[in-house]
Length: 293
Length: 313
Image (cartoon, chains in turn purple, yellow):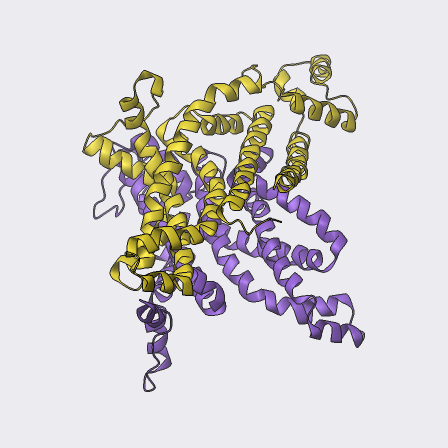
């Protein structure tokens, strides 16, 4: 059992193999996820060019048609082409996911670096972060959305705030472990001031776990945006987003199940792709953690 | 041991204090005037002033905070703007379905996922292991409500095996209750199962590497005995942690699942409160859910000391 396990984690290196072949053999799932993600990004960015018509165009004569040649995913209750709506919806989901990941990583990095380095800041900040983590993320996001009007920008804000504490935790743990290292002390002795130490010496070590955490945040942001839109607390109904489309389709489960099926399938595939990429990144960037998971 | 327990309980107080502060700030961060919202569109300024005085919103903010905290400690969570009922009463009415759903989900998830993880770790590298890992990644990626609708479509509409939606209390019969609960529990449980199975497998793999496992095999113990009594017991710590941490996921999922399966629980209450901008109810629910989450993590921490006597703090 130990031998097979060792083989799966560290397959033997064949010297004549090209690096690409080795990459494919070692991380098949990550490459699959990456490929899927690239397809999704291509579809989202080039939405008008993928055989779509106007996603907002009403066509009541064609309402609730099953998938066919003219309408690849069928039509919804107002006659809108579901394929076009799904493709345009992918834009919102991916945009929200990317923005939430980027903003939460940035804010979390700054707060985590400062908090890990200064003990006094740390005790205050960690209390606040613990409090924020005690509230389940989606409840916090829903509550924040209740304060603001429905718009994509507000959804991004509402989804970023619950994710910041987790990033702060990760960054802070790295900073705490590195703070006492010899080279930090050496740079202090040569007169380096705090910003230089943080940016030049400590931050580069946070990049790897930060990127891994970032992919997971992206995946959960895409799903939470769909949850929020489904509950009616997310993107406004006039903008097609996967959650919105499925929310509209919920009364037609028996009549026109394709309204829920296709956006949900795309959502599942996108989140799966991001998760696979995240797992692969974690395996490559942090082998110690990879062995534990 | 008792000192540890006391210290651990006392540590939850600052966390709950931050949660309470945040929840209080929620009402005051809201755009617009809650008094105007309650008074309605055609109220005169005098009416709005009267309602504001009734709600106590004209007092300085630290007085309001003090009054609100004092009420919370006494168990008074305010009155719903939309329905006029006390929030505690509303929560009490909706508690049972949510509790039934959550407990069923946790039971199903733990009972199914832990053996899955154990089997996967035992057969590491084979197709069984691969299958469990695929399930783990898939389960984590599937949106809960989509899965719910898939189940409804498959089991209730096409196969007509189970009821579509709704909730039946167990006081009206155990079988109908379970029939109504099984689809929502499975839906909600899959994400939880994926998490637990993954953590179980990882934790078991680490433990199975240890020398004492090899010693146990060498002593001639049956494989099952080694697996269960030696390996699983030692691997239990991270598994129990993830069960505690996963409750947050569960709470989030409850909101969506109750919406899909039309279960009249706390999740539905939350959604309705959001749509009606009913801030006292939102505040109350966040407080209650956070308290439950903190409590469960407290129980997990205390469980540590039973699982691993070396932990003394």
